[in-house]
Amino acid sequence: MAETHAAADDSQAQIARMHALLDKQRKAQIKEGPPSYEQRMDRLDRLIGLLVDHKDEICEEISKDFGHRSIDQSLFADVADSISCVKYAKKHLRQWMKASKRKTEPALLGLFGAKTEVRYFPKGVVGVISPWNFPVNLTFNPLAGIIAAGNRAIVKPSEYTPHASALMDRMFRTAFDEDVIAVVQGGPEVGEAFSKMAFDHLVFTGATPIGRHVMRAASENLVPVTLELGGKSPVIVGDSADVEITANRVMFGKTLNAGQICLSPDYVMIPEDKKQDFVAGATRAVHSMYKTLKENPDYTSVVNLRHFERLQGYLEDAKAKGAEIVEINPANEDFSQQEHYKIPPTLVMNPTDDMKIMQEEIFGPLLPVKTVKSTDEAVAYVNAHDRPLGLYYFGNDDAEREKVINYTMSGGVTVNDVVMHVSQHDAPFGGVGPAGIGSYHGEEGFREFSHARTVYRQVGKDLLAQIRPPYGEKYRKLVGGQVTR
Image 1 (tube, rainbow, N blue to C red):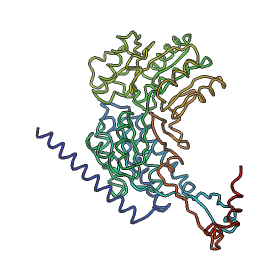
Image 2 (cartoon, helix red, strand yellow; image 1 turned 90 degrees about the horizontal axis):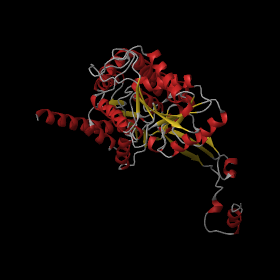
Image 3 (cartoon, helix red, strand yellow; image 1 turned 90 degrees about the vertical axis):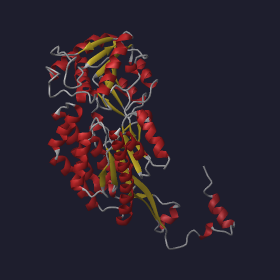
């Protein structure tokens, strides 16, 4: 009971602190105005410095949170990719900050010197709710755009990765005053209160059901949101696809972080005559990457017991409803007794829509493989379900590829690979519908966290006197001349 009261007291303290932080950051933003190009570059440099200086700690602390997570994959996905994103913002910041000249109407005013332009102003204080699966990457990637746009930020990282969250808190304290970037920690109560705060913009990365709650809470203060929510990203395998290449790339995407990626391939749709070749290719791919799994430092465990039991429940449900379960276990290891929560890569053959694994985002190393008679059938299946965050097409038929792209809708598309569109920092990343709202990365990220403000400068000569009362023939002739097709 004492522990419960202590946790409640700590949550209330964090809630009080984050309201004070919001007030402090907003006052600083108003007092200091939009930061200069030089200030923004300095802050971006400090973000890079934090990632470089703490790279080993980042990988170690994330691994503690997962029980075991591949150090090499953390170095690539959480550290190197984040650095790349911030460096891209640095490289293009000056161009992004330039005012955009626009056409002035009526044209006569432009001839006499009136000017119209759009300037990009920081929105102010941005809240960031980051997830557990890539705790550092999905904090620093949005921060690249947030800081480039001249904002301040308060970050609420996931309670599922307490070691990484505490490390980020320490990291930011060493490089930034809390009126620029601050971290608040806590569980669901703190997260709920955080999403209700009157930020100038709110970024949430996580599950779609939670995203709905976040958006509803933000709407009370009319806070604009960027939601990156995931969903069931399909793989469509065309008749012209190289099945061996397809299996290699799909299984790399499925085993990366043990499938705990918002863009992880969620299910495969493949022609019946290619199904067994895909199973054989997937088996070879896993054997090539992982000679063993249980103690292999390259193979990541499921983050906690709750998610481990959820995934096991999907397999039990699918098996009970008639699916064939193909476990890919290169060394035939016994996973019934283990230190962590590792699950071998597992194919679920012939899934049906009444199975839980086909109804919910998997977020683990399980992969349903569904046969289809044609690409048209696969496209129809995608369109009959919620729009996904990612869509993957494998094949070398240009007409078929364009049909898949043009007749489906998803947040993004990768052709002849999976996941890789998220690594393109010069292109927007985001979802559509239940997969998310808004996008960031690159220039689109800068624009997402900026207010596009129209600035019109009038000329000294009073050319508009004729449109003021009293109205006469000259006015009617002028306005009548505009009423045309």
